[in-house]
Image (tube, rainbow, N blue to C red; front, side):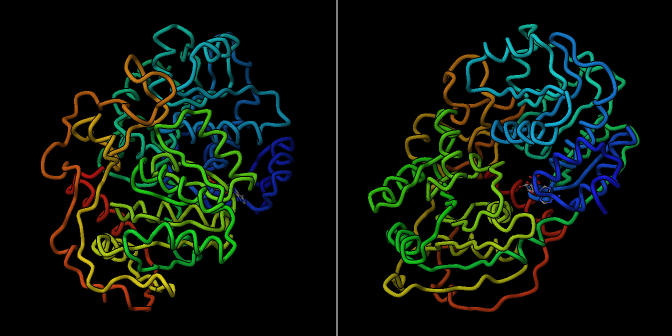
Length: 485
Ligand code: AMP
């Protein structure tokens, strides 16, 4: 099956081919013809499946016919949860739309609004936006959505997780009733189903395999290590094994900054990206990392969302994520589009319970190794895990109802906090109570977990990989129960 056979114009196929794609991915093979027919679509696909081209290509094709956008008008609107994802989707629009005369723009919070107002003044065929900033611009009369022909909700589950449902609803009422709706989501919670029910009209339904494939092609390894030896072990691994383009995940923003400093001191070029960094700093760090000028990018989960770099060779979990599903998202940053990748996790005694949860979730045991000179102390006692930076906790008080305690980035509206920082501060999902009960403690410790003996990190078996709907459902359930996100 080729892109041309899917019904795309020569100009679009040419751009796709120039980008190095020869075969449509499964989501593309199914979504492109469905979208070209003009009906609504409900697609279950995660990042890494090629979903962006899955909606971008047919959207471009459909917009080829019809009038270009008039001043302040928009013909296709793509809503995304984060500014990084918004920027990447719009970059895809420009890449695939290279040979067609359609205009595009991206808008998100945390940057000066005036250039966005000026850009919208001319009208935009395809607008990619985060919900909060779009509402700001709508309120200012800078943009008009009455002529939207196609609406895409990308990573809808994440948008809901991040508390955007009210914003989305406020945007939906401003759209014309006659339009095509495409909803992409990695998971199908009751909330997503309710959103889809209200939004979609007799949709085509597509679901591509979840990330089992990633689980299979990414080589995963656990290095047992003492808590205070992690940065030395990481330095050792990077230097000894000559790793380049290493994406490292930390639990907190403070942890990301500290690790980047430690690596730099060891002559390993590293930068941290997280919600407290300005958009300019994040963009620069990403660009340098992409071009391999920067050896290591240290990121928190929220900041890393949407990072789209082909064939990222190394992903390191410096801290294990609190939610097993995030482990799969993290390691999905490597082994993309068929490439093999390596994901290693540095695990100390505090994290044995988290590791067990992850293994239960992915239904396999991960190979354990110990690096000579970094053997963990068999008598070490587990300590509570800090879920957030000390400094952040002091500033922001109780956690919000949000994934991993971080804030929606890219969409800070109204007063407070200013423009450089969409990640910290953020919005409180209006109308939703904060989860300040048991699951909201800023420190988490699980008695059973803490007591896990160190020998839990010694087996080397590897089971059958399977990350099906049930596993995902379990993780969601667990997430809801724990209130950690
Ligand atoms: P996405 O799921 O949209 O984030 O895309 C995941 C990755 O797959 C991106 O890095 C794309 O550049 C890449 N990709 C998308 N479509 C194809 C294709 N047909 N063939 C190879 N790689 C692709």
